[in-house]
Length: 449
Ligand SMILES: Cc1cc2nc3c(=O)[nH]c(=O)nc-3n(C[C@H](O)[C@H](O)[C@H](O)COP(=O)(O)O)c2cc1C
Image 1 (tube, rainbow, N blue to C red):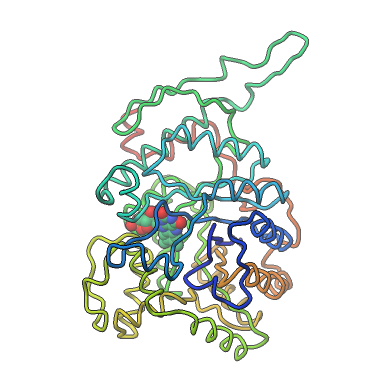
Image 2 (spheres, protein in one colour):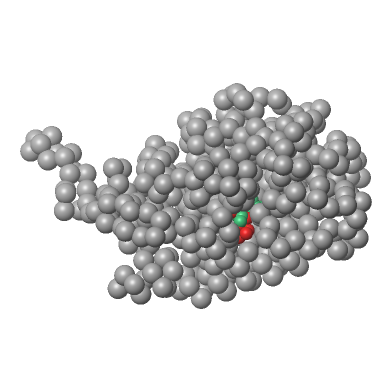
């Protein structure tokens, strides 16, 4: 079972900062170093830092609720955050979220290749296409481009990035002091890419990364998001309201991966799991209840509106949630719909639930939580979990101190690292040079051949 930790570069979750045991150091390096050490001592595969490029404005077109309640803001830049965590650890994988909508492939390929070298192959990139109008408005656009346009750009972005990583073969550097020969120019090539979105000559100014390609993570849940993930992702992060929907999702993803000619065993699916650990089920429920009490419905609503990129103040908050057509994060919206239909709640009530939701219902004793995780693994819904602490660093400490020993006792997780790179931890092979051809859409492969 693989373990990742979901860690905001800012306050955790909707109300994590309000928890009596929460630290308030999210602007300090020491906060991230402390968490990195907890995770490495527990032999987590990786820490994962999400991101957003705006202060959310989805509730009433104002940033007031986001700032007032601390929902989705502030967000430090994840790249320096994971760099600091990397310097304090030796094994832990480190992944940062960077949007294909508002960066250029050359910068991105260079930054992640650099990180992969400096960390000895521990870097991961969470590829997102972004989901808020507020983000688009920070980069010269009036609104978020539609999903097709976003994935179209993302597809070309990944192709260019992977080609840049491959633009140096694995053995360019000779560094022969005697002859003065530094490297083999015949092992480096330009890429001469000229596409709809990018023109990039190449080669990259950084040698091929130790992992070949840093680990590519993806969380798009719409049909286009799933196809994109099936082509490019090594790790798929998702979020589900029930075991049944998680099983359906995993089945669908594996089928899409196989249809693309990739090995479904070379893709790891990690559903989110917010764990609340107690000495027994009752104690855990009490702790969870105390946490839920911290959530103001407006704070939950603000977070929900931000994730679905729809101004919910346009609807009657004491009425049912209407069917929304174009939403921001499809995966979160499906989860919300499934829950709202089952429980027949008003928008306001759903907001309260959303602010404190605990995916996978992992509230219980260490044994209960390990049982649930094992059930999800056996059902084929997961290869591991993205642990979402309710408050940090304490809830990661609870998980590491109480659930990890139980998982180890069952032989489900490692007690020591055996490999050195993030791909080693995840059991993923290193991509061969040129593998981008196989991953790029079949249409592109045809054009290129
Ligand atoms: C569990 C989960 C976590 C996500 N984390 C981020 C994030 O940190 N930053 C971001 O911009 N998008 C994030 N997303 C959004 C997606 O990666 C994707 O860009 C968005 O959902 C639109 O694609 P879709 O419609 O295919 O889902 C997340 C989505 C899910 C389901």
